[in-house]
Image (cartoon, rainbow, N blue to C red; front, side, top):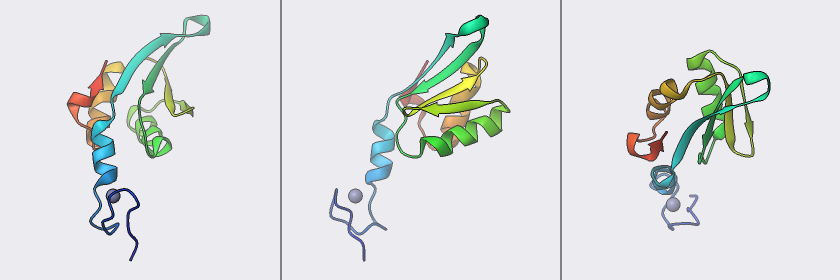
Length: 97
Ligand SMILES: [Zn+2]
């Protein structure tokens, strides 16, 4: 049996990951890049950022990368990011834009 080093509970009963998820403050903002291109930045994410980025790119049908834990999406997706993050298990209150 594996014990979580954080709370001492068996991994199956551990909710540390879920709690960490709820503590995150996610910020969604747009930034104008070279040649006037808009990039959507999502900061404050922890955990499997690459997996979340993959989901966002699929749902929004756009290109994007992950740099230092920050998701960068090509284009302005500010309004569309929120529902996808909520679907991924984040709560509405922790996302600010
Ligand atoms: Zn734990």
